[in-house]
Amino acid sequence: MNPVEKAKEHFGKLIEDQLKRIELIKAEKDWVDYAKLKPIIIGTIGGDGIGPHITAEAQRVLEYLLKDEVDAGKIEFRVIEGLTIEKRSEVMKPVPDDVLEQVKKCHVTLKGPTTTPKKGDPWPNIESANVAIRKELDLFANVRPVRVPDQGIDWMFFRENTEGAYALGPFGVEIGDDLTMDFKVTTKPGSERIIRLAFEYAKKNKRDRITAVTKANVIKTSDGLFLKTFYEIAKEYPDINADDWFIDIMTAKLVDPKRRTQFKVLVLPNLYGDILTDEAAEFQGGVGTAGSANIGKQYAMFEAIHGSAPRMVKEGRAKYADPSSVIKGGAMLLNHIGYPELGKQLEMALDICGQLEKKLVMTGRSTGATSREFCDYIMETMADKDLEKKWQGYQKKALEK
Ligand code: IPM
Ligand code: MG
Image (cartoon, rainbow, N blue to C red; front, side, top):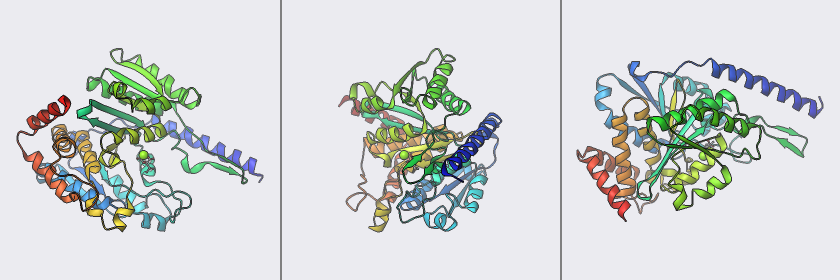
């Protein structure tokens, strides 16, 4: 078949698949009620590189916090092995079937970083494990908080997680040697559900501003639909100020100390969310300190937003890897499954240990603390019955500076 006809056929098939996906979104079941599950099964997935190491530490913190629940049979922990680049390359799948099966048997998972190959790497160019799990479990919302208490930064990002430039990432077309095309997908129901979640969050948490970020002046069709949907939904929330920015100027404004503290809740298509949340995390100490929640109506997965740092492992520095990002994922997990007090406790301890008190500092090398020592520090901090007072005190002092 000539390459143009072949590409047309391919494109036709992609359209049909996406139309089917829309039907699935429309027919999806309502949100799972964790209060009705006994036990709630929490799976931990180590992943690659420093992943198994920092995930095991995060699990230790969660087990400490949830000890009574585990004893009462309300929570069960499971360790899921095999989501490694070696195994994935061997079966040539982003997620091996047996791993996926185990993941689906858990209600929520806490996941370490996994290697994502690109063209030219020593690994086969398989799809990212994160992206595949997000699609497979329909985890449409990537929720990423960034907080820098002493700079007045408190952002909550709602990144669309199953569409945009990611939906068909591995399914672009090559026509001869000179022409390549990728596809970007935005659907109405897909936009509605993420935007609504962001507005509901703002409403529940008394945030009076929500900002959509697109490039609708250039990417007119798909970003245009996202933005139109945003303003339609905004009408249902008259008490929340809704505005929108383009991604280029938004990346600039995040660096402006006067403007950036005014942003509160941000909702954005997949790739812009990917990029902007890395930039945002940098203010808080880098991607190593940022956690991320991948939320769907039936499943949820919590993870670090950084890579697997194979170099640290090669150089024998895995034990100095900062576990904060996965632990932050753990705090979000606690909030999500119905333990907001424990989640808050863990977040306060993370603020104190990582930003406010800093009795131990992680440098990624033997000049700093090990992940184990840092986790012990977090657990000691949480055990303090004046935790909240201490946290407020530090925060006040930091803001006065
Ligand atoms: C993230 C990561 C992933 C993404 C990569 C590893 C595929 O950067 O979670 O932000 O692009 O979504
Ligand atoms: Mg990213």
